[in-house]
Length: 441
Ligand code: 5AD
Ligand code: SF4
Image 1 (tube, helix red, strand yellow):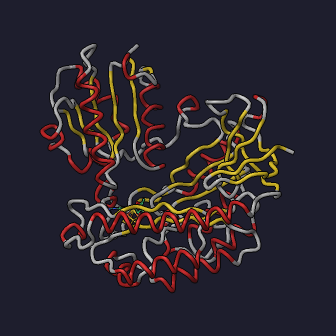
Image 2: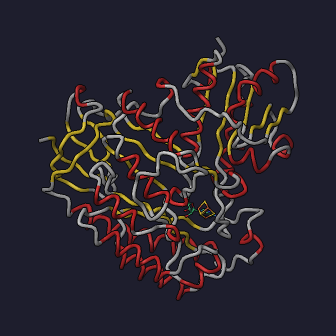
Image 3: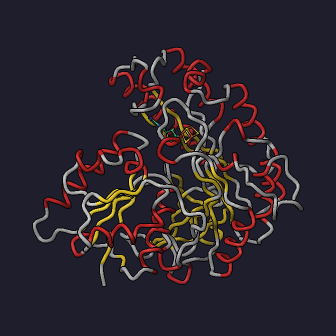
């Protein structure tokens, strides 16, 4: 049997795509292997959101081709594949085929064509109408947590972002399919689903089927209520786009215990000037109103965000506004990134006025502030008991287990093998900056 090694870079959507790529390959008679050294085929599912992620691909291709032991077929999939297309064959020696973000269902065909002797095989075409969004049980990233795509692509064209170019226009999956998918996952023993998409709350399906009987100010809040009714024990969703974040989402969470108490709402900057230049479609005032709605929920919702520092033209005053915003919002966690110019985006043509040193300083200042706030928030969990899905055993110590809370924090505790896959109550005894520690009660 032909062995395939598949490595994934980037976001949850890529992890989810890889699960389906592996499912297709397994059903077409390939065997997935975690060992690149014995693979007949090596696949990279790539990310292009920042320059660093893209560079990773080139260095990995180099490593594979340096190995003298064997010469596996090498395929590049995902965002870099979609954006670079033909040029990848010139940019990096040794790539056999390139498959775009919507062509992943045809991965077996690509491999077969290369084995037949076709050179520089490329497919950047659209997804099949009857594309199968399900994942084989054996190919899941976790036996207990499943990703369920609800919308793919992005129409927002924030000026710094490559995603609308790599993933194409927004396309919502039919609600009936999503609900059916989740009912099946529940039967298979999945305890937590993540509804995923670049902007889940921009969800706009072609038909209302399965949503008609649910209340909701938007199609997404109807979908949340429909999904909650499946009885899936824990439901999380990411990412939310601030402009489309209707307070009814908070209402839906308040009404349904199984909709988890976590919202990921990327703000990107605390300055209205920068937000305008980023073309985010929200002001800081409108963002803070949504934050207030989240914070006013009786359920104590955890709030996380993404921030970019050093966007072209970001002044010291703009940066101070971001600091003020962070102090106000007190995020449970933030992913802070230094602005990375992406060729083809509108911001790429704006002179990058913030020096690398200044970017680094701003990054470190935000990171430190976030850590301080986060440590206080995490410490406030000490002596509280929270519900945790036991996901894995620690690699270093087999008596240590780890999982996520409903508020999506990593929690470590002592346990035994029969805890795996169970939802347990953990009393928190210690808090580090990114992790909670406790014991099962
Ligand atoms: N530079 C830095 N960060 C970026 N992101 C998106 N594009 C860029 C870029 N060009 C960040 C945003 C987004 C997250 C997924 O990645 O914060 O929310
Ligand atoms: Fe990129 Fe903006 Fe779309 Fe998010 S909403 S994927 S930041 S263009």
